[in-house]
Picture 1 (cartoon, helix red, strand yellow):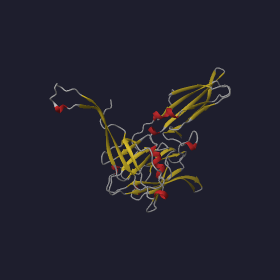
Picture 2 (cartoon, one colour):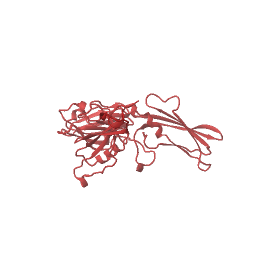
Picture 3 (tube, one colour):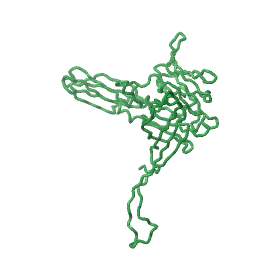
Picture 4 (cartoon, rainbow, N blue to C red):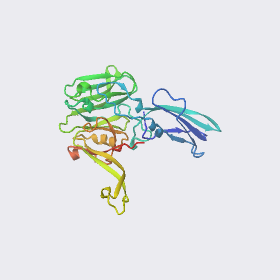
Length: 366
């Protein structure tokens, strides 16, 4: 699994080559296209520096189609949407003595994630689950409908090379374990919380069967319910560093603001000397308005600093504020800096973030 927001370099380095070329094929569903989407070529820098390099990651980014979060809570082991994964194939060519011949090929998949600098070049995406291990909170209120994202704890994407794996849900209150097997290899989507555990929460483990009755736990996450009695929680979904949808519930107080911009000019009176004082002297035009919202997480734990870092670095974010709108709306994070709090330094931790709604209030799309 490759990551579209970090470079993935294709190298062609064959002795005595004078130039190289690649054909890049990209698709979401079905089989490889008959013709390449991009053809790129380069001459070698010099006779003693013949390697050529192609970064193909930017070309994949236009092939994603992120709609709203896959809101599943009682469906298990589903294939990830093909809109969230880009298949690719690269055919490599070299020219030696004026004759072009093949120089190999490469195939694989991209997701819309990123690697970090300290991970080095060509970082690999997740090989187990597209979410960091840790403890996460979700809203649960028996008086709210699931249509308001109540008990919708979110999902995990698991990247599995074979079907000898299963996910194991353990109820945090009763300890009852529910195992769900994989039906196929590849990237499969599961709810973070089993439908029978929504009121109590659960641990979720990705387990590999290795034979002889032995198992290997490859990933563990804990998901705990929180009931907010005063405020209507706001749900924020975003594409995280692994290219998977992630979810944060902002449980506490929220504030909305409207920002209006306008141009103006002075108008001439209709009559001279003027008599229509109701006409005024300054006229406004090109009036536009945008809206912002300030949200608070409520009390969270140490690992939320990394979780929120991924939110701030995300390029695809949606928000559901059910008190105002019943549909998910696109937003951008206005907050560009946060203090990474810790329980040792800060005690009880709450994060406050500002978001811009990613559209004008007035529909001016043409």
